[in-house]
Amino acid sequence: MANRQLKSGLLANAHFLSSPHFDERPPECNIDLLVIHCISLPPEQYGGDYVEDFFLGKLDCHLHPYFQQLESVRVSAHLYIKRDGQLLQFVPLDKRAWHAGLSAFAGQSRCNDFSIGIELEGDVNHPYTLAQYQCLAAVTVQLQQRYPLITQDRITGHSDIAPDRKDDPGPHFDWQHYFACLNSKDN
Image (cartoon, rainbow, N blue to C red; front, side, top):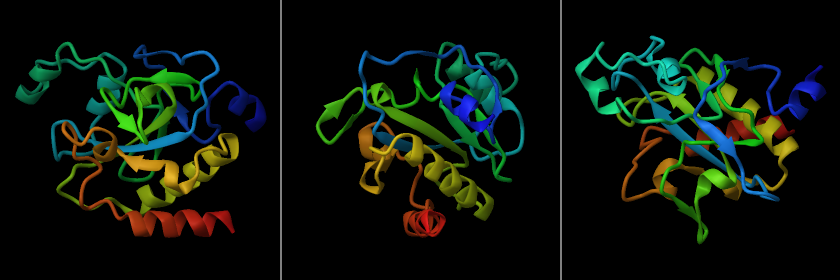
């Protein structure tokens, strides 16, 4: 069952919610980059379904003043890890999610074409949870098994591929801890 789900671009351990905000990757594109983001809606508030609604194109932008600026925004991520470690998937891995925007990595632009985007429920002003790091490390190992070109040096933050526009996952994202979790999962 897991192999069949992996072939369909879905992770067996993720709850799948189909976002309309994706399209096909360019032909013969190698998936070789993992981009880590953070999001909370409204900012710095956790636990609701607003992020899911946003990625699904169903966010009622009248519910909160901040949401008004999101009225015509169409974004998604492949995966979303909530504060409790729950894993949600919005776009099959072999499809192009709309998470990176105007971006470049190692001289290659249009990162959405060749990357997988993971959003963490959070913001740049607060630490992430242990459950999130554990889930992120486990998912990363799965992704690296499926896409071996995603090596540790091909894992980056949104701020690194769009430094003039983005600052996530932010200074509270503990890269050292994440890589330690990741390396312990490899052994």
